[in-house]
Length: 362
Image 1 (spheres, rainbow, N blue to C red):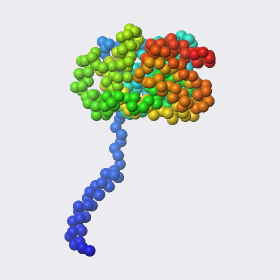
Image 2 (image 1 turned 45 degrees about the horizontal axis):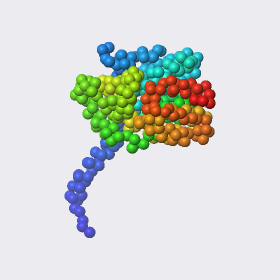
Image 3 (image 1 turned 90 degrees about the vertical axis):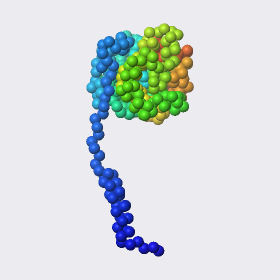
Image 4 (image 1 turned 135 degrees about the vertical axis):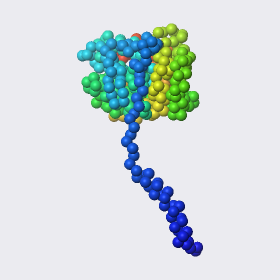
């Protein structure tokens, strides 16, 4: 066996010990305090000349106000009589509360006390620069209900809002009334439902480049020529149908997506993170949770939806607890697409009211 001289051992020690000590120092070093979360502004920060004020004004609904929550200001509206049955309407991935433009007033005029609000990163709510996971959205709603002193409400969600409603019911069952409504609900979509382009565009690297100053200035100058959604073309179906039908509500919703993408620095990042980390996928356990026990769930889905495949509503129905499934119902709106709340508002609102009132025919 070869023997090492003391000099060789000393040399080896000089080579090995400093890196080990340095590594130990950095591993044991106490971390710096977390940096404050940066919060991007909302549509409220745009000048009065912006087209957004005419398409989606701050007072689009009566009873509007702001709640100062931990991750920024949240815009909300309260419609209908205060003593009416409380209903929360949750919008989806890219279109803010304008998606309920015709449904909300219908419910309010029929005696329901309706809460609408813009999710973080959309419309008139601020956009915190954080991960947009399911818990961010559920805590936002829980704190908002606390802010307006609501102890419990019927929870209704459209598209990604359905995934939020499911997770909210799972996490905060004491805040949810007996009835739940899921319209064209996401929540259990597969990764294969998302295009390669959308996956690429939602990557952190691409979003970092897209939020840079030069790109944002270019977007502001060319907003009228932007695609419906640079993150994923979820609303392309709506744009086509808007041209076909000429419905003002659908056209306004499509346009507000473009304008948010062009003018709100936190919007695309919010959508991208929601696409990767949010409640569009992975919510099977939420739908099957104890939070859904003792509930009645109304599912509404257009038969021609090309954004969230109509096959998912029956699958959601099967995920519900057995007794809840027996008390629940799926309503298919013939010929309707993903924009069913805008294209068929009377059908949607009518089905919701009938369901709330316990009628057999919905």
